[in-house]
Image (cartoon, rainbow, N blue to C red):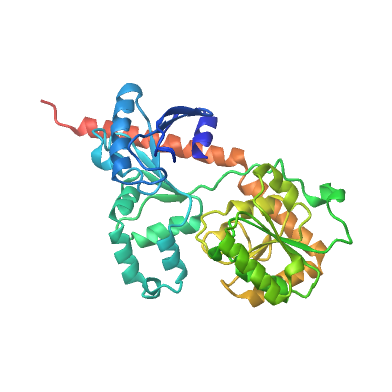
Length: 387
């Protein structure tokens, strides 16, 4: 995604990544980016093999063409920092798009014993992840897609806080038509329809959604759970729906192509998102807001970047099904108010997350990092004693 952003801004982009799932390697073009699938690495696994291969390939390419910036995620830049002969000569930007699970647990004080023990264990956890910590601390910038995550890194590594800041994803709303623009999209005699989009897993709250559905005052409301689901979770959902008496109101259409999603969201009454999964900036919530749907979600770090409580939706305490049901009941009881909340969500996406606006923020950041690095090097060279 970021490679496309940088290419759109006019930069030459080279991507170093792990081998393909079939152990394939080589150099390919992906749009405007040159992608190097590194031999000897495992697909989607950043480990010693990747650090070695990425450092070696970076050195060869940098000597040939010269890079102005290195961008990585998590500890993917460890090979550059520790093994490249050019280490420290090219500034690094780390991009963090998702809360690390361990940090999310500590931030939300989940059931885990480590989280319950608080800051001392958080410090031990941070120190244990040494490579990850150092990559963040050594980076010229750490760009997070939610202010909650940027703040969490600064608090966690308080003795040497990363230079973290917030830049969200850009979102193009052009394919999302609001319901009032398509009067044929909804029928007044249709039952209210709730929708969820995402992987149907335990931590996404799919079982709780069946319980929410069964407790609504509107006994004709239906729930669409859109997304991939394995056999075990599907069986659990069907069993729970039968137990709660909502089998005929629960629908499992499976995954849909991105191009179909705007039409699937159009005309729904609300987007329900009782997920406890660590989210940075939830794209599906952005999609729901772009479609003009009020959102009811758990109040977890990152979601308040999108959902303004009482304005673009409602944030309820995690696992508080009673409040979630009350909020959804209120939306279903007053469709006009719900539509107004949905329109406020769409306005927020258009105003705060427009592609052009986010591109401009990235362009300013990249220029700032390169210029700061240039000035620092010039000053350092000027201070060196002459022979």
